[in-house]
Length: 122
Image (cartoon, rainbow, N blue to C red; front, side, top):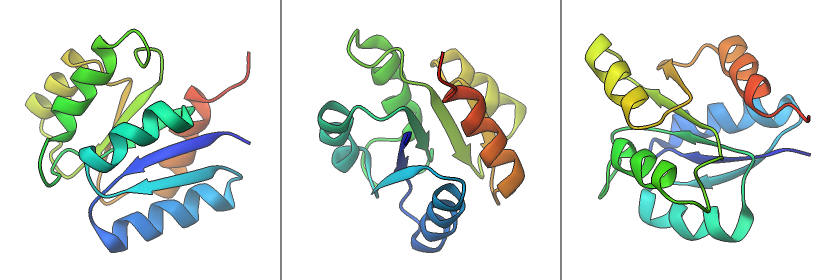
């Protein structure tokens, strides 16, 4: 079973995304901040990270950049999931290493399709 690390501080959004991913057969690790997510990345080695941008403390953009700079985590796909979805936000996320960008509110079919695209077994 593929494991998704969800970094989302909104309780309702977190529950909705988790239920959607679990119904599609994914295991989900939930965190509400980058500070909570950092040790989970190293301990759990998720197959994909689903990352909000606006978070308490460090932003999702900063965390994405840090993940993609680190040799230990650079190959983990990062999908940014945010209400901040202007062309500038999407370009910024891509420049920082995001593999995909989903706009909130989440379209569940798009979410599952995107996650499956990056968690295929090779």
